[in-house]
Length: 443
Image 1 (cartoon, rainbow, N blue to C red):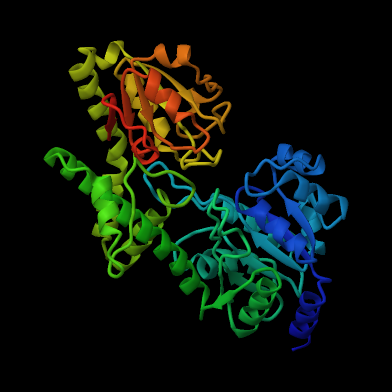
Image 2 (cartoon, rainbow, N blue to C red; image 1 turned 60 degrees about the vertical axis):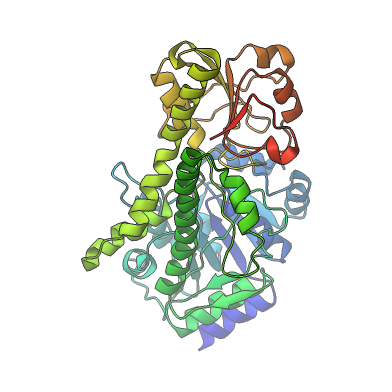
């Protein structure tokens, strides 16, 4: 096919122009990777602050270094715009927009659908369109393809459609964007070949699967695997705590078995843009087939209950160690990012903990070396604008208890261990640093 040959030639010669829609935690690292691979890359976003930041050569994502961004922008390999009509000049268009949940934990595909409608307005023959946003199996073929074909063009004949799930792990210095094997798929044989060729030009390893719904299932499976195993250790934590057994010691010893076991660790609840959300996409989709995902739903219930468990334990410890009620206590929450060593606060369990504490009358402040101010959020709009307090002896001593929710490496845990009256540690941060004291309790 002449079209296939032309696109393949553009990819191999790096003369194809790549458009990345959505310049967040997935889109910006991918855009930088495409530019480094030699493609002219254009980033699209409706958020003008992101466009301005890229133009000013200033990265707002931990995974993209500002110096590297500046080099790519100065070389004119990468630029950003809000002018979506420029999609018409792109050979490859990649969708990297959010896929959140609605109020009833149903898939909210409005960003995917609206973005696809925008692409359809400017779609032309001989373009490749790839969805990277995590979603349920069938989205690419049942949602994206019909919208694109409203343009009058046909998938597999005029344009080429694929799905390739993002696998970003913010804060992971070992497995950066292009090192992680890239799962690819296409709507038909030609699309599969072209999508694979594009990603082979950017990533170290490509793993092609037979269809978009298989690739969609791969990502959902990866995230469900993590969610249910975290739920398991969270439940074991509660059980073993009642028995006087340290779950962290159990996990460390179990990890010495060289087969049939891999460690997962408990915490105050799930966070991030994938693990707390994606399993419910499959739960919703399975209802079309008359099936219930009981295991997945139970894992969700367990993980969702963890903030309540942590607050209840803190309340008991305040009463036991200080004869103080939670309603009169001052609490310092250490870490509001959803995971260590990143500034990403999306779906962080820390915010639910803050809400529960304040509902019970506690005064709550936070310290996070990577999050200066809480950004606007859909679920907790009342928390936006609050600022991190400093970590000094005088500041620590103002509080009745310290609750460690996220164990950033840059936190001064030694200072906490010396000056705090009570520390409730949900991450085993102090003991693993040799700083356990009688005032430290795990939760």
